[in-house]
Length: 319
Length: 282
Image (cartoon, rainbow over all chains, first blue to last red; front, side, top):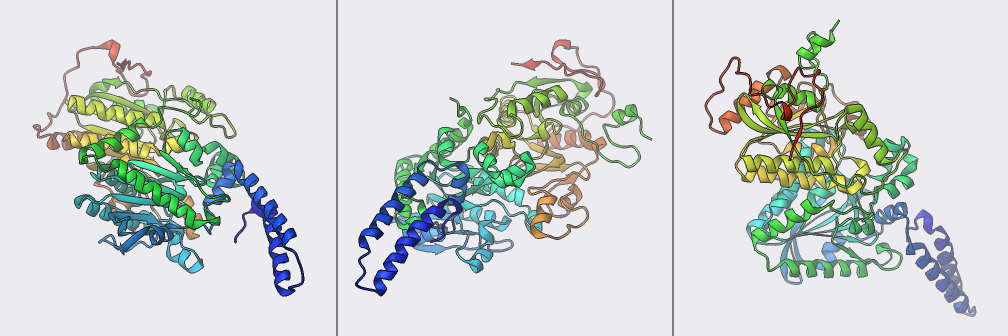
């Protein structure tokens, strides 16, 4: 278990309980169960307190937690017959973006998502979930394929943002992002997006211009990272707490702003504490939304998406 | 030495080195439309501070400061009129207004421009200039990427040309949405055009970037633009392209007759002398 900075007191209590149990295992005459379960109870209470009212910055930390289930985990847990499809037919296959045909409860879908990787090597391979132009162009190709064969599209969003690299710029990442957003808007099939961790800026929008957008309870979605915003507006990257607060990047704020449609509850202590339950909830949500959208014609689907985005901003937080 | 008057007559281009200086949105529209005559298209006013955003300053204060220093309401002006006797709708972003940043207002402006273009069956010409999305509007500024893309789709579906003129600088979410979705992309010389800026890239990859990286000519070489055009030739080129795309006869060269005066509805005059007098059409 990787503990976040604000979970340190929790780490202590859980550590103590674990220690006691280890001692008891070594010495069968010790009776520690009462003490250990008291600690468990205390830990549970503390966990509930910590997560009851997470600040925006803490949400960012939870959203980026390395133990949260990532795109690949969701695909494995929720979908069957997953058949990865690779490449943009132009330059490369971007490992930061996963995608392919799969079935969700027997229904064929095209699933596309950012994958951050889970250890040093895979994180480097996956470029920490930061797509290059090839990634968006692969997604465009897969969305187009889905569209032509009437297969709904599911996107799983988890990216710090687009990759600020020389090659990515040379190969036109602005254009790639713009075209991917445009492709989302043109799909005559339902497009459902779930922000499962970080929804970073243009890299996220390029996949999340969807009929319905859901966010996990402790995920974030923002125009810029709090660190980036702090360094520009506060001229001090250390002001990320203030920036996170000001940006209103939590699922709760975004729901109030009518930017997203649903919040998917996470288990107590966040998705990182119980990936299976989290993924199951996400699966239910996707299935439910796809059922809702299934009766609509191609024109209605396109119109629905356009109207959704045109209407965004009509209500502020104060309203 | 460069005289102010000379610079003004030269559309803000240095007559010695051809450096293209920034032009305010209003000056650009005045120099673009025939005889500086255009009508502003009304843009619906969004919630001014949807997030109650505060950094070192409150967002409404920043807005007021920008309004005072520019004399403009926001970072984009939408106008209709004729260029080379060709009716068009133009949207022009103003870098001097909070870095031209794209928030709800700019999004609404582009939607208004597209709607008017479709209603009147006119081509849309958009001049981009922005540091990117307006952080003070948080997620709502990011949502302008899909919103403006819907606007571009409307113009395309109506079978009308959408031409983007990318001016210095066009970066961030603006480049990654409506600025890169044109039927034709024209940039001004040496304009910085990118998603991630050079400083951010240098910090990330820790190496020096090549000379001219992310400048208009560099993008032309990499296939992202159709043309890099000197400001002096821009109008003529826009007229030529739109008329050909619309299957209209070639433009008539030479002096055009003076327009019928509609003094109440027009901003007429020398580019920089003119006060923002163009009234708003409802």
